[in-house]
Structures are given as structure tokens and as C-alpha cells.
Image (cartoon, rainbow, N blue to C red; front, side):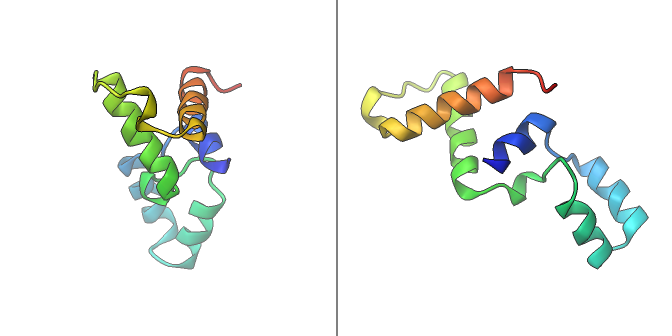
Length: 90
């Protein structure tokens, strides 16, 4: 999952994006730079990854999810996401 790799590398901040925009302009050069950057903007993550991130944030905040609130695959993916976020990149 390329989104997990991007999360592990860290999401692109607004400051980083503005720096690239200043260097590349607001055209195809910026598009190319973003596509080839190891980090991603939050908005460019897939909808499923965003859903997992939002549910993880609710769980971390203490929202009381029940065992049947997610499918088995979603629970596994939440676990993979958690592991990815807690394991430092090499």
C-alpha cells in the first residue's frame, strides 16, 4: 500500500508544499514534483486510507468502538496502520 509508505515518510506540510510551489511554479513542474516526492499531501491519500486515519484518531481519543463496528479486514488494516505509524522509518 503506497499510502502506508507515504505515511511512514511523513505527510507533506503546507509549508513544504508552498516551498515546492515557489520553486516549481503552479503548473506541470509542481505536479511532477508532487508525484515523485516521497511524502504525500493528506488530500492525495486514498479514501480508504483517510477513513482508517479518521477512525484511528477517534479510537486514540477514546471513542468506544465495538468489535463489530468494522469488518475483520478493516480491523487488520487499522492494526497495520497503527504499526506503520509507530514504527520509525529506516
